[in-house]
Amino acid sequence: NAGVTQTPKFQVLKTGQSMTLQCAQDMNHNSMYWYRQDPGMGLRLIYYSASEGTTDKGEVPNGYNVSRLNKREFSLRLESAAPSQTSVYFCASLDRWANVLTFGAGSRLTVL
Amino acid sequence: GQSLEQPSEVTAVEGAIVQINCTYQTSGFYGLSWYQQHDGGAPTFLSYNALDGLEETGRFSSFLSRSDSYGYLLLQELQMKDSASYFCAVRTGGFKTIFGAGTRLFVKA
Image (cartoon, rainbow over all chains, first blue to last red):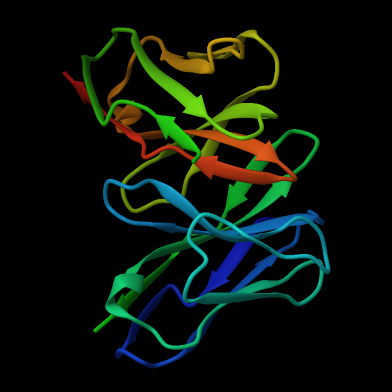
């Protein structure tokens, strides 16, 4: 099925460890996004990539890095995880014509 | 700063009509969207307004007034399955899209 695939679905890290969340879309969309969701705080934009070769900071970029590997893939890296980064992370891609974001299933990250 | 304000919770009975409001203050505006999210799931798209007025999609309608920086989502003939969180989102420019904190809708029998 066409859509957005993100891995892993669940991850537990210790403070200071690093990890990369992977995201891939097969809808030929130009723009891709990473959001985090915490209870009562909605979806907060971490980074986005308007098109292949570009990345821009969102509302809460500190502690994260991203790579737009190609048109399909957009990864999110935590270099030194902190408990404050415990959250559910969603990747999304944008259909520019309809202005519709399609989200992946989410990655639940716990930092101890 | 940029902000989107929406009520945190709304409760309604099955079969009723409910309106969820969203006011926004953003540095740019290209359109207002609405997304639905059930517990444990991913957000899914409901509607998009780029211009003033009402957009209708089945039981759901969405309204935008750009001069008032205001929009709402109207849900008619509420069903139990409509119990979910609803988020307004603004595309602020350069394909950047930010979300409100969400409105939790409880539908009672």
